[in-house]
Image (cartoon, rainbow, N blue to C red):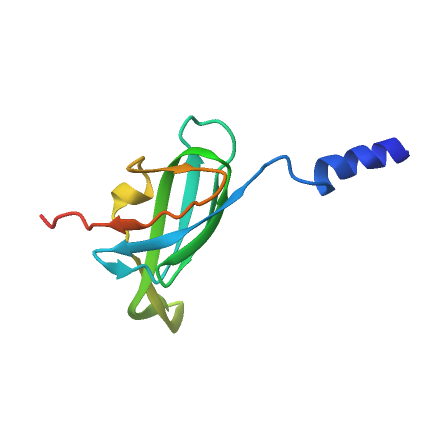
Length: 131
């Protein structure tokens, strides 16, 4: 019984086998800080787990494991208000819109090499040209 409990604690409650490091930086779109969003660091080789954090007022702190990473960023801002569900729920709610171009949200456009220490990455994103 004690061995079983030790095994369970070792698997689920003990120290993590991951050695995540802290990553900090800023994220802007066309020179403007992203008000709210998220940043994700995914292993470029597809092996292991990803890491990430939240963006607030253009700044982020994230956790990820060491190695070459693909970086995806998403960001939002409030742009006026709208009716929650016309005809069903007439409350006014914030209209939240994405401000990060698609190529930074879902593609492997951004990369970063996460090291054991000294991880500061600033991402200066540019809007896609209007057609």
